[in-house]
Structures are given as structure tokens and as C-alpha cells.
Image (cartoon, rainbow, N blue to C red; front, side, top):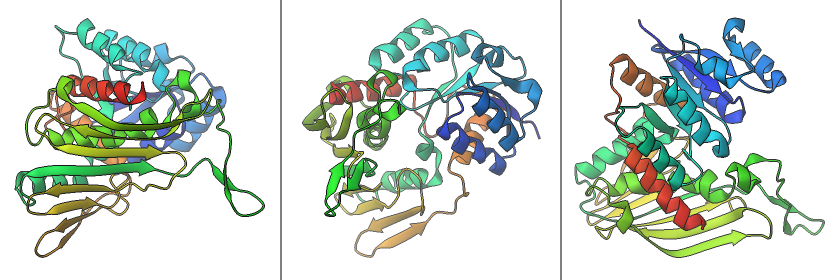
Amino acid sequence: MKQVNWGIIGLGAIATQFTKGFKDVSNAKLLGIASKHLDKLNKFKEEFKIDNNYCFDSYEELIDNKDIDIIYIALPTSLHYEWIVKCIDRGKKVLVEKPATMNAVEIKAIKKKYINKEIFLNEAFMYMYHPQIKKTVELINQEEIGELISMESKFGNDILSKKNFFGFKKIKKANPKNRIFNEKLGGGVILDLGSYPVSLSSLIASQISKIDYDDVKLININKDKRSNEVEINASMELIFENNFKSKVSASFTKNLGTGTHIIGTKGEIIIEDTWSATPPTIILKKDKNRIFNINSRENIYSYEINILSQCILDNKTKLGFPSLTIDDIIGNMKILDQWKN
């Protein structure tokens, strides 16, 4: 069976989790890696048995390698624009970690640069490729819950609290050396976690009608941003032009969970764990409740790798599902810009 050869630039924690997904697919192989940190490069090479001839301490050497078909950009968000452009200029297909760029200006510049060129560029929202989301969309399109009214989607974990001597919670200081707490690197809860429920809100809203992102309204915006630091809690409500509403929230200090609740005129859909699918369970609440336990692989990233690789093998530049186009990426970035600024 033919295989797509992948390369990864940036070997942090997300790259490690992503790479574990290759063991569950047969149409793809991680061939090459690149990192400017030799300790990370060597550790990654040993753990995943990467041929030394395809291990580089230069990003350029990896993307210039003729044996690599697609590059997964797992660098901090602030570096995405530069390396998306370099990869595409060298004829490489691209999967870039979310969010695709720092802001809408950057992703619009990419679209303008390649307006007359068919490019392969996808944003790495791994949850979208999982059959749990496909099943959710099927239930909506089969009108199992009638016409869509609203939804609520959350992503929050308490990673900043610690208890003091008396047992009361105390918010510890965020470490600016950590990417997620560094504004210049694209940190903050809105870009890091809030991008997930925003992208899902758009995906669900698009099942009603094509979205005009310029007409999407943001109301009830709340942000908790401490002095000289990124925002650590944020929430808002989206109103799409078809009057479909979505309340989204993200947090570094509250255990909001990862659930999504979609309400229609005839019923409701509850996704217990939207982003990791652990467990991959959907509850359809109607006259008689139904529970869908989705059969799935152990590693959620394997779906993303498999679907994108098959698309390449079939000589396609666009996916069937999830059909997140560059205009959708731009639209979601516009929403994140408004929420953040």
C-alpha cells in the first residue's frame, strides 16, 4: 500500500502526541523531523525510531527534502505564518497546529499570496476528524433534533490554582516562558483553548447555511486578563446570521470540562468529551433518549493523519469532511480577534 511521507517541524508535547497516531494508520509514515534543540531531536529520534538521515537541526533542510510529502507545523503560533509560506513556496502540503496564525491579517495574507494557486493547507483541529463529530453532524442533518436553536461548548482546566495552608485556592503566577502564557508566542486561553469551541460553533452553524463571517456578532464578552499577562478565563456568545446562537467559554483556572450541548426544536445532542473523545459518547435527548458509543481508535490523531493522507493519495486538495476551507480559517480567526481584542 502506498504511504504518504510526513515531516514535523517543532518537537514539543503536541508533536509527541500527534506522532503516536501513526501506529494506527497504514497509509502514512513519519519520515522526517526537525528541531533546533538537539536534545529534543535526539530524544524524538530514539523514541519513534526515525532514520538519522531524516533528522535535521534546520527546518529548511527538512522542507527541502524531496522525500517528504507534507509538513506538520507544530511550532508556537507566532512562527506559523513564516513557515506556512516557506513550506508552500517549496511545494509542500501543510497541516498547521491550531490556531493557524496569530490573527486574521496573517491568514488573509496567505490567501492573497496564493490566490491563483491551489494549495493544500489544513488547520489541526484533531477533534473534527473523529467519527464522533461526523456522527453529530449526521444527526443534525437527519433532523433528529429539528431546527437548530443554540449550543454551548466549553474547554477549561484548572492549571493555575493551588491550595494555600488553609485549603483555599490561590492563583499562582503564570510562567511567561511557557508558550501558553506568552502573548508574543500566541498564548492566552482564547487562542489556546477558545479556538476549539469557536471552530465547532462555526461547523455546526454551517449545517444551517453558509456562514458570512462578517455578519457574525459577538455579545456578552468576558475576559479575565491580569496585568502584564495573557487572558486566563474568557467567555462570549456568538450570534450567526440565521440567529443560531452559541455560548463558548475557556479557562486556565476553572474545570469547565470539555462538553458540548446542542439544542434544537425537537431535541438535544450532548457530546460528553468534545475534544479528546474520551469517552467517545453522544447522547441524543428526545422522547426516548439514545446513547451512541462511537467505535474509535485509541489515538485521536490517527483519524486526522489517515484522512489527510488519503486525500493526498487521491490527489485531492480539499477534504470532503470536515470541509474547513481557508475562508473558514479566516472567518474563525476574525472571531478570535474580536474576542481577544
